[in-house]
Amino acid sequence: MAYVYDPANIFARILRGEIPSDTVLETAHTLAFRDIRPQAPLHVLVIPKGPYVTFDHFAAEASEAEIMDFMRAAAQVCALVGAAPGQGGGGYRAISNAGEAGVQEVQHYHLHILGGRMLGRMLPH
Ligand code: 5GP
Image 1 (tube, helix red, strand yellow):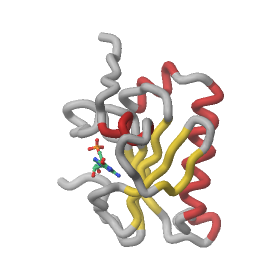
Image 2 (image 1 turned 45 degrees about the vertical axis):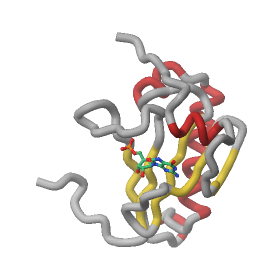
Image 3 (image 1 turned 135 degrees about the vertical axis):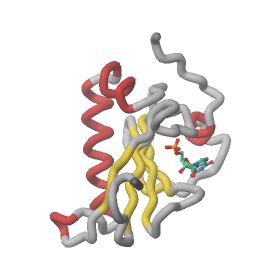
Image 4 (image 1 turned 90 degrees about the vertical axis):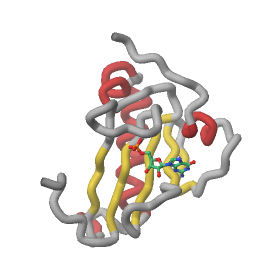
């Protein structure tokens, strides 16, 4: 079944400027801002400006320019917030929830970048 993007989702509203956000970085195709309910001292969301629902939707259908911009922006965010290990940062986890099993709350693709403390095992057992 093809993805259907709902332009009423909360991140679409942030992109339209209808809701404020704590911006970390904005580029041509990407916006990064702090999560409103942080689950770690560092919790930034990186989103494409285009209408993509999940990681796989974005990876399959976004243009090369959008994908390149998104990946470079995510790297820049890691560096900006002092998390990139290659630049002396403390490390981070980049995750993206999709659909029901992934427990995705907001139906606009986003990459969580979490850090600032030991995050423990990837998934609870
Ligand atoms: P998901 O469960 O979809 O992977 O994560 C959605 C994330 O968006 C959650 O971590 C939640 O705290 C965050 N979030 C939901 N609404 C808002 C909002 O209005 N502003 C910001 N900055 N983050 C939000």
